[in-house]
Length: 166
Ligand code: PNS
Image (cartoon, rainbow, N blue to C red; front, top):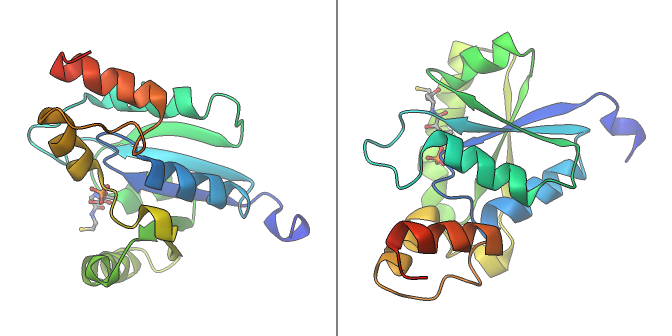
């Protein structure tokens, strides 16, 4: 496996508002396949995000502070433009359930139409995390629910600060 991943780079894009244990699992598993994984935090995806892009980046950097293969960046506009500008050809997306597939398939085909040299690699979520999403984490936390097994402790602390329930 190590020979096959010489100089290989992949982008793992998303909103990450905030990063969940499902994302963390996928990023860790991507690092086992690619030499370098750029976690690309999208700007302007949601009109009212809970966390600013800087906050989201800081949380992901904190979680992966001992994993030098993971680099965290932000991008604005089209993903394929960011990838072209950074000379990256592989995008990784996670699939939790069949319901994710339609949108992901559409996005992968659109990205390929726009930039034929870019390939989308789909990774299945761990069965343990199929129900975990940033949206459900925020909803649960906003209502006072325990999210400690859905996010990294560092992220949980930031969420509790946001909702002022620490
Ligand atoms: O975590 P998400 O919200 O599922 O991530 C979606 C994201 C940010 C990866 C996707 O919406 C995206 O790539 N946005 C940038 C604009 C773009 O290139 N869209 C696809 C072609 S129209």
